Length: 264
Image 1 (cartoon, rainbow, N blue to C red):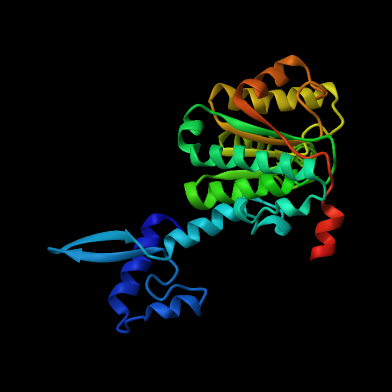
Image 2: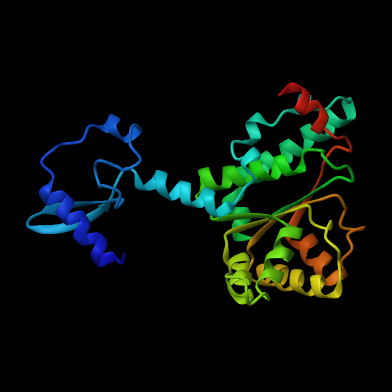
């Protein structure tokens, strides 16, 4: 449906509706009773028609951004303020997590200026299950909800898998160029578990394309990894770009998966 068709639907709804919807109806129906799902309201001022965003539009846009972000279902409600320091059992783990949270909180509070400079985060610890993905999801959720960012969240292995799918002519998917453009153009790209993929020359080339384009355009990248930048299995052309555009954040060398599963 193009804009003219949407506009006609809005006008028809406005002209034909004789029932004033109550605001509480918004909570009881998937279809907004004010705009009937168009997300726009027609107003007439001095005989001139104006279209203005309906009160439901902001909520609908947020839903679309969350869906596009593709944050794992388990982490879609995660927020920095609910990130549990007490999930760590050692004092060193608690202290490292506390410092990481302070750094990330300060980053988010200054996000608008950091975004202008293209600065992101590289969150790392050698220990699997240390909470890095939970933290990355918390950051992504806040950037979507508070700053209205378009965020894409994916593991490095999934990115490689999606690129390979574009080579299968029997598979109905986007082209490689379209996929790479999506990864390059989103406001914030979150790459989870970076470095766990099999780092072949072809993989290096693909990630260089993604990272370099975002580096040149000063677009925010957020990584989680089980490797520090020093031990990451990529050459300097990738490591140096990440180092220049990301604040490095140490995470605890302690797994919290078993403890969290016991709590829940």
